[in-house]
Image 1 (cartoon, rainbow, N blue to C red):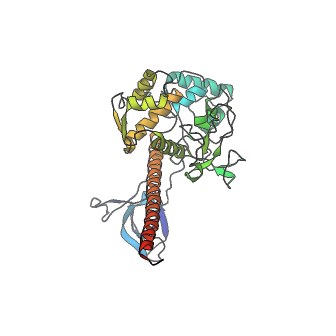
Image 2: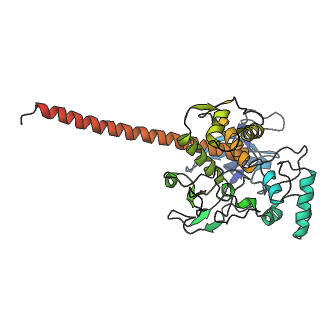
Length: 370
């Protein structure tokens, strides 16, 4: 046991601060603290330490308590994402894309047939035949999940701001993102689809609000279609989901709610038959969105389900964003809508005040001598 302060350390592993901790009595009143929290060790015991939390920006210490010594300076090593066979093989956010790249049936379930296809691919590339998509295999497949924070330098039109070097990344752990928005479209390569390579799941075309939107980078080249199809590029797919949410708010006729059947009519615009949409929306929402379901547009969870269903229908497999990525994007989009509403309100108030002031001045002039 140390009789005096030893030094400042950090604690990791979902640590808790206890008000009581000893070998003879159970811990009491555990309070969770954040990974990486700094503590000043006052006394060290066999399996726990008496500490005070180091208050940020202050020389003195903060709250006093106990933490288990196994957490002291034991930062867990960063674990790279690995996509592998599941038992039972339920849908996984990356599996459909991996299957599509391997040109096998994209049911988004990582089972024996997918493991076999991965091993076959690994053999063709001289990689260990594990059947798992780790970093080496993923990069050979063209995935960029392991390139968080690496610089990409982009020229116009792919970069339409004063910034030219971009860190493409996922805002959530182990999430899908693209590092190659400037990749040309190759029909045999699903990674070059506009919705994927631009981190723009809704493939939203260039819009007047683009430069004020968080995460906006630039635009793709035109694909030569009648409507130009110059698609926006975002630094993270979560921002792309947010852009879809904002676009939906700006364009859907009813900004409050609609049935799934009404939303499908909005999307298909009299084009393809409605039934495939309805069937896929039901499938990719795990049966929570049928034709009669009323989607409340201010409900983040319902909009998350709708986004996942819309994008998965377009991709023909579970879209490769994790649920956390979808939810993060919807939240960012809703926050941006609220800012837009508040800004519009301020503009209306300013305009009304100006118009009132002009009217008042005109009225007053009628009473003044001429």
